[in-house]
Length: 140
Image (tube, rainbow, N blue to C red; front, side, top):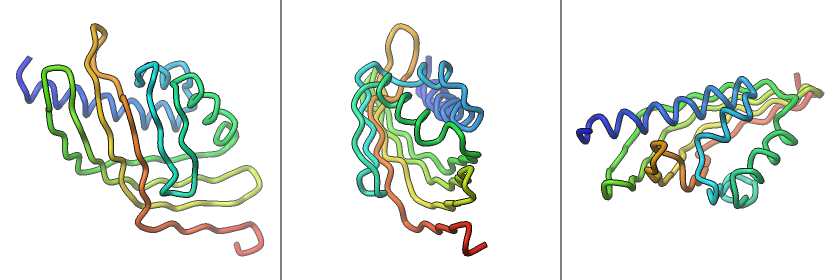
């Protein structure tokens, strides 16, 4: 594959991440990560989660009942070897929990990718926030 084909495969991987997150397709989402993925949301008010199964469990508990809309834009993807890459994605996400609390967030995903026999997977992801609006049910 050419470098452009590899970059497009990573773009499609991230698109699958957003779609499976918002449709709550947890089995499909599991397939976008390496087994040993590290997800770091500490700079966005969250935690560090290690392992794909652990991250899917975390998402099911935190967002399973919520309506989510994730949009990633303007990817900066660099191939660092035949089997590794880095990427930065601008992010806008909306999360509406069953109790009426709402988050409108803006920031970036800083990621690494690894290519195995089954294609590209997310190896690490760090979420940083530029701005977040929280609305509680009393404020609406």
